Length: 326
Ligand SMILES: [Zn+2]
Image (cartoon, rainbow, N blue to C red; front, side, top):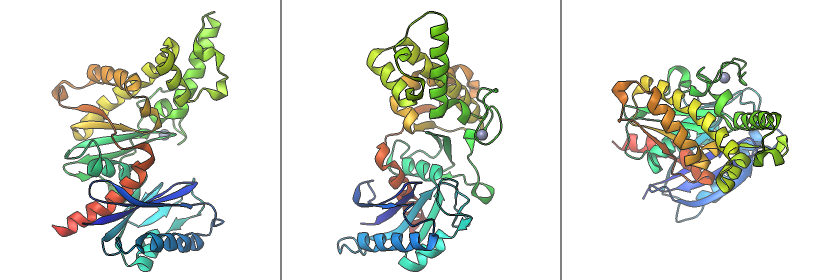
């Protein structure tokens, strides 16, 4: 049996997990990403030690065939993490070269959205699909495009920034500095902003909603979803109806790029299930070009939120190993 070491590097923690072909995490560890004072060499030392400890288990030593790393701003082609604003290192960090030299194992790096899509293909709801697009709805909107049986990485590994296509509300400014990006209309902060806006309108019109009892700063995407799901509050539901409508129309546009079999929604905002999915599907069906009708599913990720990043990272190593085997 082959095993793959998945490493997900986040702003706060680095999660490590040894994963089998069925997507079971057989051993795991967590390492602080921040505690090394922003010195990359010290971080790599600590990471190498953790890997050695994980792999030292005699039952695993010979079975781990590769390491996959998912990280923000990671470049598959250069093997470097480049100018990631949420990570403590400045400039370009050659993590693939450093880790493969220390472990003697093949190391594959990619950005977290691509790793997430590949994880879905290896272990999740996209298993067996040759054409799908994974959309991650969290504090931003990430995407991984899988087409014709492989991940589309593009020139310099920069393909798949669907969150920054201007199919959202045109007046909303995005973190990238431009207006109208999908991310600025459907990521978690946009859902929270929509809730605050609708609540204000509700109060102005002398109406009442359960959202009126919650201070603006506590109206997160998660909180609004809980209110909608537990009380059925119509204003809380409207927040997700408006969000889902924008996302559904956007997915209908994206369908024209690569004619996928499915869009897979993942991330915190997608956790509320049908509350978002129903309006997404409805808007998608209305906006979709007729030649695609009936051929594209919209699915929710089947990977557990807490494990998806490590599974995605491990799938990078798994994909490379399977390619080399052929
Ligand atoms: Zn943008």
